[in-house]
Length: 627
Image 1 (cartoon, rainbow, N blue to C red):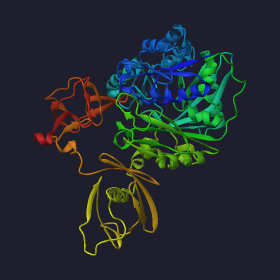
Image 2: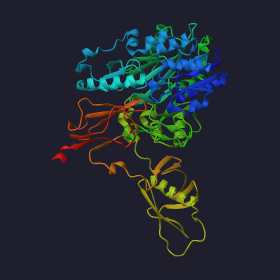
Image 3: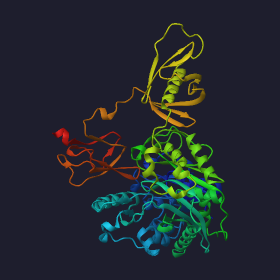
Image 4: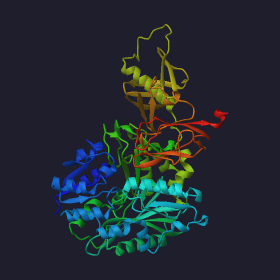
């Protein structure tokens, strides 16, 4: 029997494994980097062991340190979670060689499937040979041989871009997985990303736990997932299940695994097999009424599965809540989490109130999961829960998630528009500003006045008074409180119904709406029934763009300069859109390109340099300015 489990991971998945361990009476051990001191997964574990350093390569990718931590803490088993070393056969062998139980598939199965090229050969689908690629093979998809989660993945539409994208993909794969090997395959346009969850024991039983659709993706990383995959015909479903069982039998598989496909034109195209638990496993748990982590533990203890899995019921959908700005190229965000509360649905979280989102790891804050009898009900339930959530801190993709869940291409009964190009087509409409910011600004001004002891009833002067003037975001609020009530410039349709510090009710055109106001330093969050407005209180820090010369390239996010383009230096001629350097933030690389054609007059970026948002990286003087 397993008595103590070390989770070789961090954040949300570590917390999720710990939850099941507690329910089963199993002690828990966390590992943490210097950047994760005091993180939620550390606080939730019974014991924690420090891995000196901050980057993944120094900490969570050091299998030798993790094995030593397990032995030092007295653990007798290791659960790898997902990412990092979860699909590393050498790590699995090191765990078992140390006398510990490995809660995962045999190393031989990991080895066979963790390499995407070997997996395809095993399934009779060898990848393209890089030396033989021609224009006829375009578009191409570059993928990390040892990777997943969108890291090291690039789409190539012009042969001239292939070499540069290979360099970028190899660098990103090396940083994320410790292995820079990549391969190329045809890129299937307009396909759906569908996967099959399997579970196998050591006694020959294989469970096929339905399908999941994971087509809504950004940067080849999933955003919204659901089970079962809607709109699949019986022939496609049968083919998916058959191929998934074939993959499991070919590797003598044990434990939880996922076989992934692109479905296009009524055909299933094998992508890979992930020999681990998936981020989106909760939707399968909800539909089948099971705990996959508990089953992983029991399989690792040698227990058999039942002859058949439980019956599926209803529909489940999961949304990944990221600290990122979708309207700014999905730029990751950092900062303090003041409040994170989502009610009415399952919330698997890696952060709690008061935690800080840093630059070293994936920006996913939590996963929200809804289950209901039908797909339409599950989508409605999750969208409303997210809409009503209290999320105060860095910018997130919350509004994008709500709109995605309600978009006709996704929520409609016809699954024909459900494919991996969803955000390419719809991102602009999905990232428009939330309406009603002007009323949120007025509510913020009134709540601030109440907090300062303002008078909102009785004893008003008969003489006219100067209006109170406050600025929130782009909105200037000018108002007076008179015997007749609230008089606000530009708000003739608004009547003040009630006010107190932190809460305001406004009658807007006869409809009473409530605003909950929370201030943290120079930012005010105004929560309403339809979402939240984050407003900057003015005066505030000067915008860095006001202090720098035209053509200045400022860091769009905090991160580390990982590369500068070959041959680039001060005095070089550059063209608009030419990549100049690459920043790494939250396990992803971000290109910084020349904004115009001209001369690079300054280059402050140095590989290895840590930069904050707004830091000056380079200056390009345009051809017009030169003239």
